[in-house]
Length: 413
Image (tube, rainbow, N blue to C red; front, side):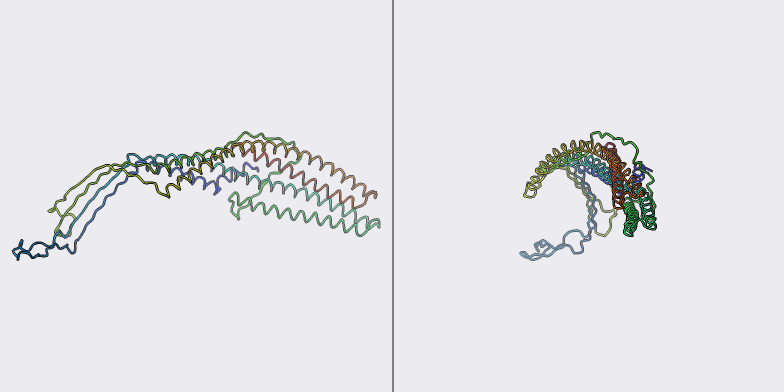
């Protein structure tokens, strides 16, 4: 029944908006991962059960075993079965890159929120454009059917005059061509409406088998009002956040070259067994453990320097884009106010032109009936009236469309 009801209907089923929700949830999960990445706690438990199927051989002096001095004897050493249980953990105490990564994640959430709003704004603007295309065409169709009735009247008058012998056959042909042309306009507009409904279904994610009808009837003679826009800095916020993100990314890459300090610890239990068993109560576990601190510093290389330089200039470009967006946001606001005034003035003027063209056509029709005007002049005035009506309807539709853009502009911020 209205554009607002169509937008509300679309909000509940749009895949674009559903995708935006997924992107926001993804950004929140990225932030959670960044928080966990600051301490970057790492722990593992391993258990090895080993069967040394062939023990290593060592050479010992043979005289140790009562043999001849100066000779050696091969002796297998070690235990065939060994079990190792190891627990290891480390945690970062100083991680500058991790903190910068968290900052990036927070900015990314804000960017995703703004991007989603802009995506919704674009979707609603496209739906509004398609909506008013259909409304415009439906109004044109209604008036074209009225024009068809007028064309039929002209044809009947000319045919009657021909039968009376006061009109030429060529006049009948011209009147019939005028009637057929108007009928073809009805057919073409009907096809155009069908095409626009297909486009609207794509935008609103409406299945092909579902039916939809826009029942709003545009009153082209109703007084027009202008909705005043209020300044919207959503696009500027997007550019400012991109600049902020570029700066944070530049700093994050630089901090990866700073050292990280971690605390670590390990606990190991070993069991040496003469049989393949993990839970042999007769063999004790031998424990060993250690703790310590470690510092890791990544020495800058060509790749790191290249990434840092790239990030630096991306930040400079983002600054320029923000300056441009600041100017563009102001100009877009002013342009929207001008467009509202422009479409209203155009609709008022086109209405006046149509009324004059319609009056001329009616007078020419009466003059033709009285035999004081040629058919060519009548048909020209008919065509001019039809075109002026189309222009009037389109101008009113454009004004309503502009008002809808202003409403969307004012509401999504």
